[in-house]
Image (tube, rainbow, N blue to C red; front, side):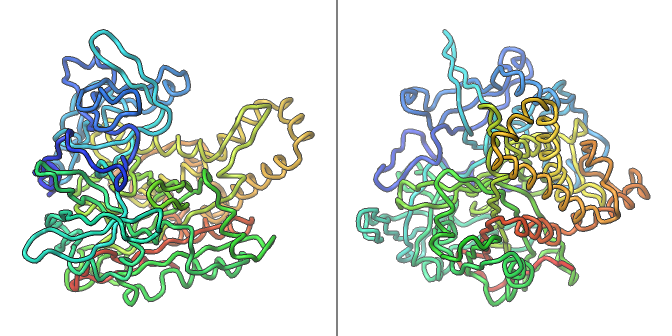
Length: 585
């Protein structure tokens, strides 16, 4: 059962402050989503946001409820309308919600025209979803209220502030730890000393083990480089650590650099998941460079500049050991995959370049309360109650390939396949939250989290190429005067063709992928023979690790730069679990 008690049982007063020398807000705009009452929907035209952080000049809004709405832009409004549905629970959704322990948006049942903001705010039985606002936020102040207008789905996040510390010692017989903050001047952990809390987490009943543990956390080999801690102060003024992240995972300081597409793919395919059990509690960061323009290690690292974005492919493995999860009862474990975005930022606490990571989780309804949408690393991975960092082995592959992750500037108008993919993923996650109005989504061979995510990848390139084709006269002029961008565009089309050949090996593209007919997760019982045949026709994307390997291989062959981040049940030490690598062929 979803354990709401961890976050709701602890009070984090908004008037509790932190020392800005050692802590920073996770984002300029943050707060708690509140679903409007049925009677006030027409007036609200969105949802409520209880403001926890506000941008400069709007600090007076902290602690208040403001309106959160979609910006009045034709493109955004059209996108929003395509994923807005009446919600009436199917028999399956009713049954699995009442008797299966799955967390469905029960408060939205029988609502008409539920939009993506309402589906996010109403995804849990109570208003407990904490989010940060992504991108530009427009503010309008009315006589009785203030409204924030956004273009992108709010990002689910854990905590309110974050710091960078070393764990020095556990305080015996308490949930407290002595920590030392990082000093950006000395570049050592000789800053302020503090006592923080790491409350005992609630056991995940479906797995039989705790989602994370603080046992021997100070003895972790990752403690030397320190940890980012995410959380807020409780009513007594103690900082409560709700989420953790190993600093060494995000720094642009790889353990190893591999040059050449073949050697790089060999590492990804054969070495990245090797010896998972022996690597328990450890991480690895390996930079793989597909092109051979230079083989200077520092030059390869410096190619990743502040502001650069990378396509992230996420794959997780299984939970083995004495407290093995039910899905790992057989030797075959498929795992789960999704996409995300990694952005190179200059961290204000460490004063170094690091990755900031978000996941676009196309996720079916589940017992954990994990909600399909955009999830910050602190929520999806690092959250001590709901994240996977401490309990699963993970591989995040970051792909930097300018024809895809960069922009095409056509007569002053930027166009990006990556941006279009993000839009597709935001649409898909919104649809998953309400099952296109049925209230639930389920996994089948033709449609599952991995396959529906991969549709977004194909659709993004197709959408960009169609947009360019619609302006042929402009494009011809552009191609003539910008040969470098024309070459990049041809590289993008080549990658799309190769991906199609890899993921659709029966000779012809899946018609639903070509036509963008998203059917969402389904069950075999719906159309068993058709669904089985359709799934077999793109069998590589049924296997998350195989799909990941295949996609990375294509990008590497076209000269991409790839960063491979691996974690193996990281954090405190739990002797009763072991990592299981997902299967591949």
